[in-house]
Image (cartoon, rainbow, N blue to C red; front, side, top):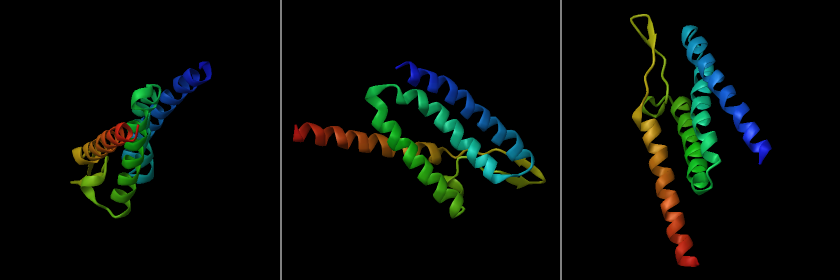
Length: 125
């Protein structure tokens, strides 16, 4: 149990540092890859402590998987509303834009799958 707590204490600050690197360096020099890594890092930094809670482990795993898949689709096919973080060049000024859909969609999917899993588990037991 100690090892798991130590990994969490090391991993969360590391992910937050990755987020700030992606936020400042990725934005300043318009390096999209760093921005993507930073955004994924902050979402994982928020989810890592949730892995410790046994009751919500499956929804968190589903959320992370859905979020990563959605980000890959959003950046791969350049679908703006699926991106968590978009670097925009409006009047030579780069800014941040957070799409609510990119967070709400994976949360809703994770909750629906978790709810369906619980219902199926009750029926089979």
